[in-house]
Image 1 (cartoon, one colour):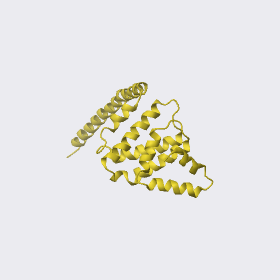
Image 2 (spheres, one colour):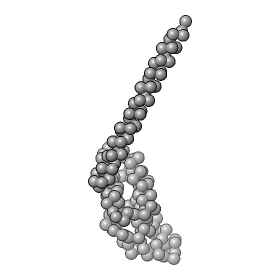
Image 3 (cartoon, helix red, strand yellow):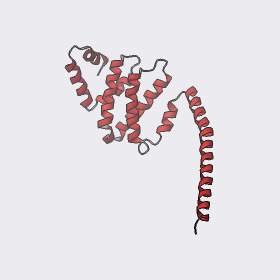
Image 4 (tube, rainbow, N blue to C red):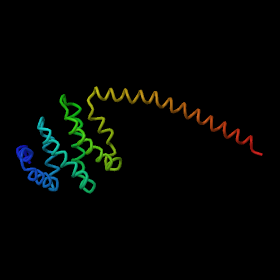
Length: 175
C-alpha cells in the first residue's frame, strides 16, 4: 500500500473500483498492519487517505482483534499510544473527522482489553501527555479530589446521621 495507490482510487471517477480496493484491504490479512505502518510514517497526508487507513484499522479491531494473537494486539495498543502522543505534541493535530475515527478505535480497544489484557491503560495514557498537559490534568484531579470528596463525605455523614435518627425514632415508636 502506498499513497499513490490510495490516492488513485480516491480520485477515481469509478467509486466501485475505490470500494473494491477498500474492501480488499479491509479483508486482507495484513491490511490493518499496512494502514498502521502508513499512518505511523506520514506527516501531513490528505485527510481522505488517513480516514481510509483508520477505517481499515477500525474494521480489524471490530472483527478480528478480539481473537488476534498477543503480538497483533500489542501492535494495536502501541499504535493507539503512538497516535495519542503524536496528536498531543502536534501543532497541527488531525481534524475532527480523523480524531473521531481514532477515538472509536481507542474506545473499542479499551473496552476489549481493560483491565484483563491492558491493565496499564491509564498509566500508558498519562505517559503520552506532555508536561503542561500532565500538570493541568493533575491540577484538575487534585481539585476534584478536594472539592468532590469533601462534599461527598459531608453528604454521607449527614445521611448516616439521618438514618441513625430515623432508626432510633422507629425503635421508640415500637410497642
